[in-house]
Image 1 (cartoon, helix red, strand yellow):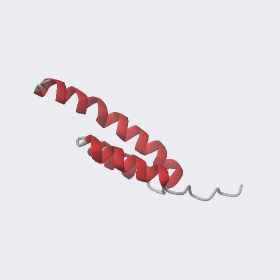
Image 2 (cartoon, rainbow, N blue to C red; image 1 turned 60 degrees about the horizontal axis):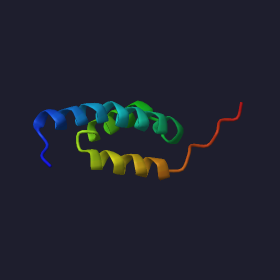
Image 3 (cartoon, one colour; image 1 turned 45 degrees about the horizontal axis):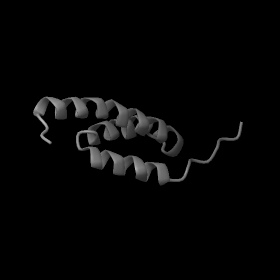
Image 4 (spheres, rainbow, N blue to C red; image 1 turned 90 degrees about the vertical axis):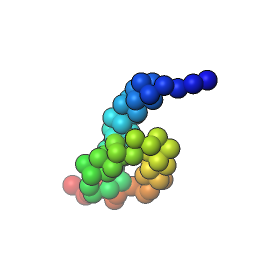
Length: 69
């Protein structure tokens, strides 16, 4: 099975926003800087295995304490 550059480019183009959004929403719960986490997740979407590892590490991180209102 052969992959051409167009197919590989489309896959990466789809994965970048997906990894960025997933990282951002996880970052909202688990870090104090969700925008930076989302940007890093988007960049790591260029190499999908690194993006998956980043999301897994972020998912395993403990949540921030809830603010008392």
